[in-house]
Structure formats: C-alpha cells, structure tokens
Amino acid sequence: MSRLAAALLFVVAVGCSGGTSDTLAPGTTATTGPSLSPSTTVAVPDDSGCRVAVSGFEERSWDGADDPGTFTSDHWWSEEDLRAAYAEIAIQGDPTFEELQAEGYPVLTFFLLRCIGPEGDVVAISVSELTTAQRLPMGAGGHAITGGEYLPGHTPAGEFEATYVPWSQTLWEQVGIGELVIVTWTADEITGTFAFTAEERFSGGGDSVGVIGAFRLTCVGSGACG
Image 1 (cartoon, rainbow, N blue to C red):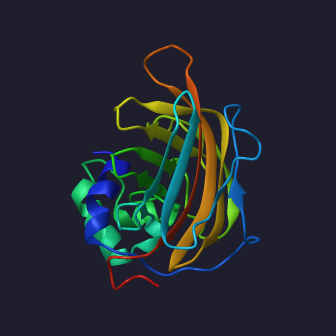
Image 2: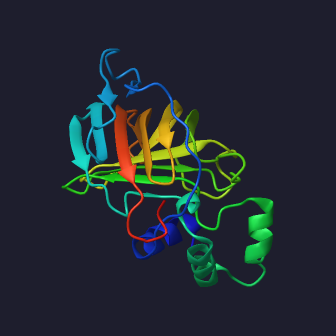
C-alpha cells in the first residue's frame, strides 16, 4: 500500500498536532492556464471548506466540505498516531519509525488535499514523497506543481503533483508548471489557493482544462489538534 493510500484510509480515525504560524498578505487569489481568462480568480473562502472552478474543454465548479478526508499532513498528527499508522503499512526491509523520523521523511505525507464535489468530482494535490519535514514545514509559501502521477520518486522533492477526476471518471493530469500558494498554515488551520492546467490522460486528443481553487481547512477529528 502506498503512503498516500494509507493516509486516505487512516486520516478519518486520527487527528492533528501542533506547529508554528506564518502568513502571507490576505486576499490571495489563484489564476492559471491558457484556458482561463487572466481575470478569472478564486478567493480563499470566508467559511471553512474548499472551492474549485474548471474551464476550457469542460466547465465545472463545486464547493467541498471541511472534513478529515479533505486534508491531511504528518504535521497535524501526533507521534502516537503516526506510530500506529506506520505499524500498519511498514513491510519487511523498511526503515524503523525512529530512522524515518530522524531522516525527516513522512510516515504518510506532509501534504494531501482532496477537494471532493457533491457529484464525486475530485481535485487532488500532494507533495512528493521525497519531501522531508525540513523541506516543507508548516507556514506560508508558494510551491510549484510539476507532476501529475502519484508514483514514488516521480516528482522531485519539494514539488507537488495534481490530478483532476470529474464525475465521468476520466483522469486529467497536471501539465506544465502550476502553483500552490499556502496563505496560512498553523496547528489549527490551513488556507491557500492553487492553479494548474491539466490534460486528459488516456484519450490522446490534446484536450485541456484550467483548474483553479482555494481552501480554508481546519484540523479536525482528534483532541491532538492545536
């Protein structure tokens, strides 16, 4: 089982743990892509949740809930939770939990966002599994989205992967360079925006969409939250 898959299975049962605080200027918005007009933006929601707008070959938009399955990060989990998760997924030959922590690598992931619409549409953004805690601490910052496949070692450390899966179950993967902007990230809340261009994975027709979104998500589901 991959660590991302394990994160999705485990997150609903455990919560989050402490950290530091940093912010960028308020009012940050997301823009991207040749299929979007320059004036198209999505602002960070005032209420908790996530928001996505897709344009280009197809037009879709939705708001997603703020729940434990929408965002997870090792930064928001207690050591006890992480030990329990690693005990479930580690196989023979893997490093020990202590060795993994000493090197700074994730037990599951340092960033996994899944904004799910009411009809099952999903935008998923995750950081490379090669990323260490030192490379992606909690706090504000801009990050490149460069990959579209959840394959260990495929995306360089510190960079992010993105996919768009509409209700039709086709798979659209990020192409070119997108951007994730984390506006705030504390022990209680993460806010930000994202923007990327995606192409349909299997048709070979060259169809593309621009995907923009924003999120305000809280650490929920455990007494370990900050």
